[in-house]
Length: 606
Image 1 (tube, rainbow, N blue to C red):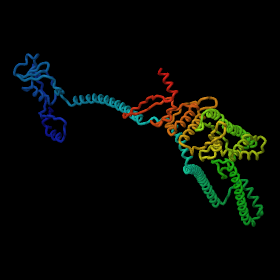
Image 2: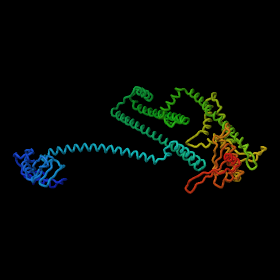
Image 3: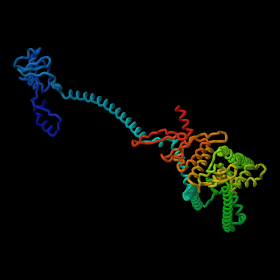
Image 4: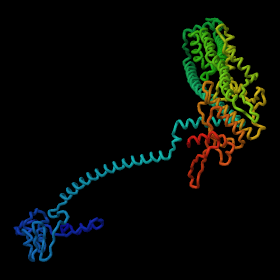
């Protein structure tokens, strides 16, 4: 209940009418006045209260002492009987048969004032602010934990989405290397693609060259702009000086300028003759103009000579940071001073010494490598041919031999001869001209074998790869050592003959790659053949398998069921592999077909 002075009741009603209050508030207008204390019965609640002197205390006291409001205080529940309202110490009330007990859970309003209520509200706000602060801290910790979990989730999703092959550097480098090799193979096999690639390399080189020219042009433009600014400043200075001279009619000359003008004037006029002074000045102007023209012409000639010398230097020693313009005089002067300070003669001797060193360090090992490489091939073929000499080949049971023959092409012979001459040269006794000619000859030779990444050098592999300097053929000999046939291709033979020849050649090639002249067996023996010898009869297949075995290899041949009859008599073990309708695979060992294998199995059974 809100008490309002009756004199202010109408004004308060008009004031609160447009307000939207969240709770229902009851109010009552009372007549406010002075409070006169009274002596109340202490047996009742009204007599136990202390009353504060306010304008509304009289109304409150009347309200508390009214019938049905004021209760008699009793010591225990045993005295609650009766028709009058009574209350115990614990707060239980009873009037006749009606009563009540328990907490109201409502704030105390007796002795209420807005200052005390505002203080309570402020305390409650501070308490709630502390609670909200703790909640905000918990919320921030949960947000951080959530962000960390989302980061972990994103990282795990990324790990699940990324394949190992995409982040494995070794695998990526291997794949790049494989793709580069495949690209080179494609380019070598297709002339049009190779021409396009060469054209692309050429265009890229042109772009690079053009970019350098653009940069040089931009640099030149910047220098010209700076020079223009200097000329404009000089022009402004000259114009200012001319205007000053015209206004003041005086010129300040240095001592050497005065001496020069006096000497020139004495040559064209008579000093001290006033009548000849005017014509003499005119003649002096003409003489000075002529001298200026001659000096400018001489300067232009010297400029052309300097630029020609600069151009000759750049033709011999190209430097993209230099141009033949006379503006680069300080840079060329620095180069000349450096050459003079170190000594040109000593530099020529150092250059000649390095030329000999280059030839000895690079060309001598290359010359020896050619002969050693071919000898190494012959030495590694020797044990292969020794094994082939014991293996029957073909229907007539001849013997097969791998034959090596060097190709004496004119260009290769000329290349090896030039290499031998250059590798054995000694330039200690050469003159400057001979050294220069020898260096030019060496440059021409190195251009043939230099590995150039910008433009493909098609001749490099041709001259350096010794495999291109020889030809390998297979020769068949009879028992008397007479040559019966030479095989350089597979055409014109039956399927069985072709497979037998391929088996001998491929086996010999593998033996060559995996073996050497020291070891009797190859470094890796197992060889897997997919559908090997399925087109050959038992005789051809037997000789081919014997060749593989004789070369030291262990054959593992896979063939469709029903197409291995030619192989079965020569196999030590036969495994049958099958897959049922449920995609379950199984392997079964079949009975060996060869007598030797059968005897071995019988011994094991016994």
